[in-house]
Length: 317
Image (cartoon, rainbow, N blue to C red; front, side, top):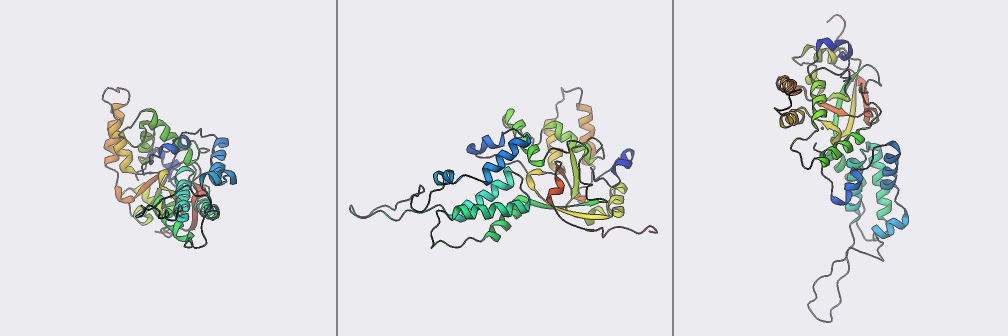
């Protein structure tokens, strides 16, 4: 994490300063391309989290009316068909939890609530003989596969807002990226070029107009960074905050670098020189610092804990 000394005043305690947005199934494409206004966001989450009972009856039938039926081949002409099989409640709950993480950017608390709600809905068609659902196991599976734990050095609890687009949520950015990609077919680069440039310059210390916030996977590595400005952040910040965020909202240096490399155009005379300079600069950035970028203005909603900075040095050191 290199910091431009020219921006030191803005960046001293700034870490103020992603994986691939999974292509959803065709039946979910309408959701990922929905408008990103607050009204539409609320409407989308309401549809996901509070389906009407009549809708549930049609989508997920009760044990008396099952749509998922498999019949074993009959060995005799008059042999009765085998007992129909129901859609497993555990699979339904896991699918709903996965959608909550990837389509709504749920916090861990919201994820637990979604699992509980889905279990209640699944109970409408589950049989009394079905195995009990292990909600904690579903939660652990989704949290382990769809979320990542990151740390950030801060002085104040509010020091986790980007300088730009601070009112845009992470999931709104994710949907915007999905729409940008869908408009050009199947691009090779993971991130849109303009966003990748912003991320690249953020990692080089130009954060005053950045929509990103910097975090690290391993704070101990930042504390011994070869970059004196990055090391100063770890050695002087008052607190160390922990965030558990959806992986879809996290940008990695490798993906940023590859997106810029794939998106560069030698015929783009206005940007080609700066793109090459940025590529070379990013190539010299120490990767051992484990820097990650969060794109969104709602990082604080993913905070799980905070503590006094264990890497802070005394004034006489």
